[in-house]
Image (cartoon, rainbow, N blue to C red):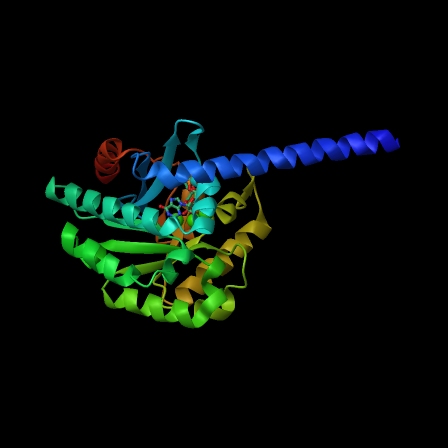
Length: 283
Ligand code: C2E
Ligand code: CA
Ligand code: CA
Ligand code: CA
């Protein structure tokens, strides 16, 4: 039994070491991914709940590496946050997304909003606000079209800094969304003291509206509470992870302003999204 325990431990050690080695190898590859042109963006429609019309898209980062194939941002973004590389990558994302949004406009699409994810780590970049201003100038995109989505995570670590930077961003005329709301940190205390315009209810709450086919009354009560909170703070409410017509109907009935999820369109390359936006607009 003792022998067995030791073997299990060795196996565990070996697995840990392999995982750590892979993370190191990924970090090394990530350092060169920008210059090698390995990043690209997918876009997912944001849809007005009541009318079903698209009002915007969220830009979602993708990384295709030779060694690792297509890697999920959930895996590689944390690695770039540790190394600080997220600042340079984040600038590339912002630049690319705003130019794409402007290109759609110039091609005759009705103006839509473009939502870009911002790592809280980027708030510590002293040039962030100037960079956003520069991107808006260069792309010609109206600031009111840009939404920056920020997850709660690190915001509370340095409240003074968060408050100052978010206020400066708001003065550019852009809007701010609190992403993944309801997961993680004790959001309620600072929800009121940071200048967010939009509340994005995490996809887990959409999923919990039902247990398979049966409705989940507990899950519905929680979603209702989140929606009521956003409404009473005068925030626009977005529900993420909407995969079924039933979820869409429930969320619309209960006061969500916008919906997003596979039911309306998966994240896709800009060219493919153009068609999806037109299709949704005509529906
Ligand atoms: P997020 O900002 O909460 O983005 C929503 C995630 O849910 C995306 O995953 C999207 O593909 C996925 N999703 C959309 N609709 C559905 C649905 O109906 N069902 C399900 N199951 N999933 C859905 P993705 O693209 O893998 O991105 C994961 C996370 O990575 C994002 O979560 C965001 O936190 C981060 N991320 C992505 N792009 C960027 C970026 O450019 N910068 C930063 N800092 N983070 C990013
Ligand atoms: Ca987001
Ligand atoms: Ca989210
Ligand atoms: Ca998320």
